[in-house]
Image (cartoon, rainbow, N blue to C red; front, side, top):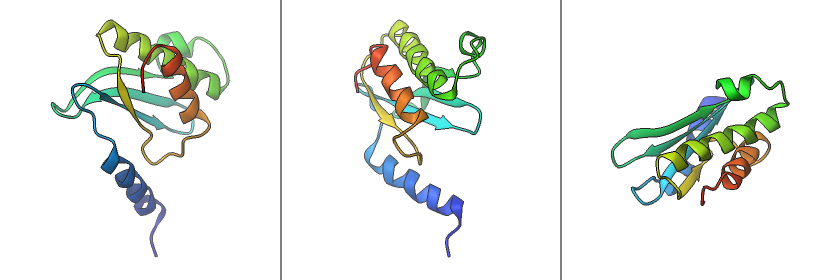
Length: 117
């Protein structure tokens, strides 16, 4: 019988089989923990992280808002930071998380911030 972590790894590998960040379309990777949400834009060809945002950032931590609103703000902040570096097109990597709740709000915030999925 498979454990929880083995099932998560299978789901993650299934997503990563289809999602790869090239120079034209970089990968926006999302991760959430119980308290926080993290997002980064990665160039898989070079193996470099180009932009990072999380709910631990000063701008977001100062506002005491619900987790879903924080996730949306993280997406908007990441979009702003990536626009400064000239990044517009990304492919969304949700990892092993389902595309709902905070992960979906992060994606919506990034789209509203100007990133093209």
